[in-house]
Image (cartoon, rainbow, N blue to C red; front, side, top):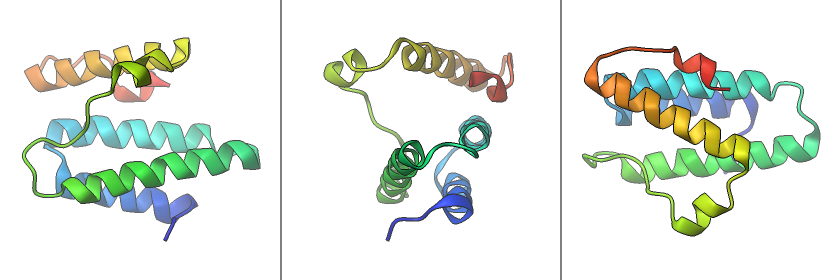
Length: 113
């Protein structure tokens, strides 16, 4: 069953509590909040794609529950298909994750979007 809107948002945050280490959870929660805020007034075609991708992310997290490493590597093809904005956002998330893992802090994750 595909979730939409607030139930999808809540399910993702719930799954973060279960699957992610505290420093990654904070980063992930902030990113999810920023993305859902940014898409509040999205057009229906954009919103459908947005919800489809977040449902896929939720399914991925649920499938990895209990595993020591949560996530997936991007293939070279997936990286090549990223828009310049997506590539910039990916690099910023990498930096934030690295800072978070080393305890150096840095920018807040909400500045990602």
